[in-house]
Amino acid sequence: MLNKIKKTKAILILLMMSFSLTSFSCTNSKSKTFALNTENILKQYVGEYIYEAVGISIMIYTKEEENNRKLYLFVSGDQESELMITGEHKFAFRAEPEFKVEFRNKKNGIFNELVLIQPQGNVTAVRKEKATIKIDDLATIDDKLTERDFRGVVLVAQNDSIIFNKAYGKKNNQENGLNDLNTVFDICSITKQFTAAGILKLSTQNKLTVTDKLSKYFDDVPKDKKDITIHQLLTHSSGLAIGIGDDYDTITEEKFLRRVFRSRLISTVGKEFNYSNIGYSLLALIIEKVSGMEYESFLNEYIFKPSKMYHTGYVIPKWKKDDVANGFFEGQQAKKPNEENWSDKGPYLNLKGNGGILASANDMLLWSKAIRENTVFDEATTATYLYPHFEYSGGNETYGYGWWIENNDTENKLVRHSGGSDLFATDLWMYPQKGITIIVFSNTQDLTVLSITRKISNFLLQE
Image (cartoon, rainbow, N blue to C red):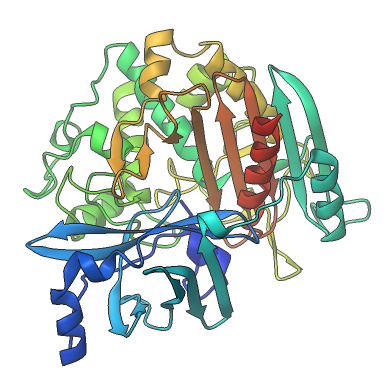
């Protein structure tokens, strides 16, 4: 979900990113005894915990694997993470041993608190039934954003009527360089829904099918990857790793493919959810090969123009110099995304197709409208686009084609995606049946944008 980001950031980043965890292993006698006592012991930890400061849900659950019951942690929008025991009611992340989890406050046979211990400080989450999350109205949320010097744009619409739209803070350090309602942001991994839309558009043109395999489009695909399908790339179930290099590395298609095909699969093809930027860059290449057009040119012709999104893309839109926000890191202004090491056709393949699209919040509202009104796709294709194709994390989460899907069979069906980098954080929520769209963009690494979206959603659904 997050592009160019470091593992050593603060807790919100850790919670929103991929927890790279491996097996539940035991190295001392106490741990071995614990592991053998399986579900009767582990069930005291199982449940949903809420990090109340930002409204984030943390799921703890078990799964039976190879005759061994294992404990997992899952944060919405992430891949599941297996926990490794280190002591009595204590666990650690094998890949990041500096991050630890402790369970506390046991009553009636279950623990009521989960404490995440990490170098930047501790965070405590409480069982959902113990949480006391306050439902704020839009005016209160506005006041809080102003008080804490939020930097970005918030847009809320219902049935295409904008009910809240406000810009906050700086977009650059120039005089009068303030964010406005038309500021263009790096939307980061929200880009993936446009890549998925491009694939489906080609499908409606009978130029490909989602069951097509990599070996149909690329030469010399190794045996372990040749049967990966487009569907598996779209749903992050290909087994491919998250990435192979920095977003702004200069890399040719030949070198990119060579690295991808030589990389090790991190799970069996089609069996597990592993968020993969690589997969979406491969999809961008497939769009180019099948359409005979550049990736952005195809999206512009078949996705953006029909949706009247004239301020969305990599290099095609004719933005004025200061339309695009600079990112800020720890208060310091960085380059605009399109001033980074891009080619004249946009970013190189470590970013292309999986992130880096630039857009305004107003354009993203037009995209929400185009989806709901079947402007780009017919009704059946839109249903395929927003369908929960892959279920994972013990059934707690589903992924469609470039979207996370919640409550699929209810009037509160939610389709959403977030994104982030060292310099930007973004979130887009859409309730198709209710006509609600919530967009929060920030030109800082402010991952509380995810809590802003959730707070607005809670308020609107309560009305």
